[in-house]
Figure 1: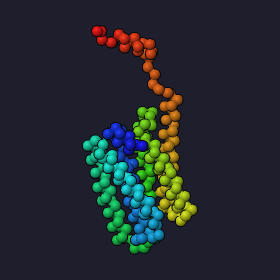
Figure 2 (figure 1 turned 135 degrees about the vertical axis):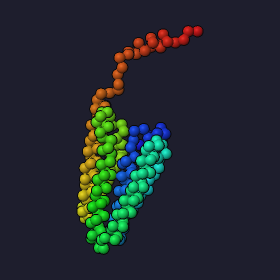
Figure 3 (figure 1 turned 90 degrees about the vertical axis):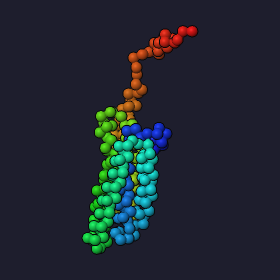
Figure 4 (figure 1 turned 60 degrees about the horizontal axis):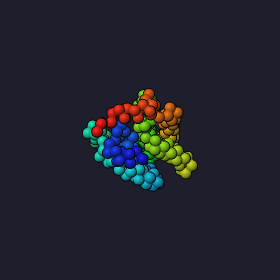
Amino acid sequence: PTFWRIHKKKTTEAFHPYPYLASVMNCILWIFYGLPVVHPNSILVVTINSVGLFLELCYLAIFFCYTNKKNRGIIVLFLLAEAAVFAGIVVITLVCFHTHVKRSMFVGIVCIVFGIIMYGSPLSIVAKVVRTKSAEFLPFWLCLAGFANGVVWFAYANLYSFDLYIAIGNGVGGFLGLVQLLVYGFYTFKAWRRGPVQTDVKPGEVQLQNVANRPSV
């Protein structure tokens, strides 16, 4: 819905690219974590995050097309920085760690850090939500997806195949997603309670003004 709105209006308005940039890095790291050289037998982690990476890149492409020059520069800069950081992580993992246990631990901790950044990235908009008393530009579906994603992966890590790193990162992520949903619900409910903005001009006065302003023949 957010990107349909962006496409329809041909502008990104006050939406930020940061959540999608954080998601790209998060997906890349989890794909690397699930590879046989790091954490064998994690095909589900690799598959799902590959799909997620494709979708996030599509979202960023749409955002890039309709945003302003400043945000385009931010997107390019962040993607280059993420590529450099990821390359460094790969080199450190393969050169400095020589067992699956140690590689899983190092990459898993890195994934936790970037996962929390991804889940918390919509919080960059919360300050604006509090200041304006409006949740219009807090992406509801992104927050809901983050919450659901955290809960599902947390359940997977504990029930299907226990994985401490997936459990910690997504447990914290699910909590952050819940916080964002509560903020969205609170300010949306307040806006609903206030109702539409009222003006001091009565309907009859508007009609009289229209008649008075109508050009004479």
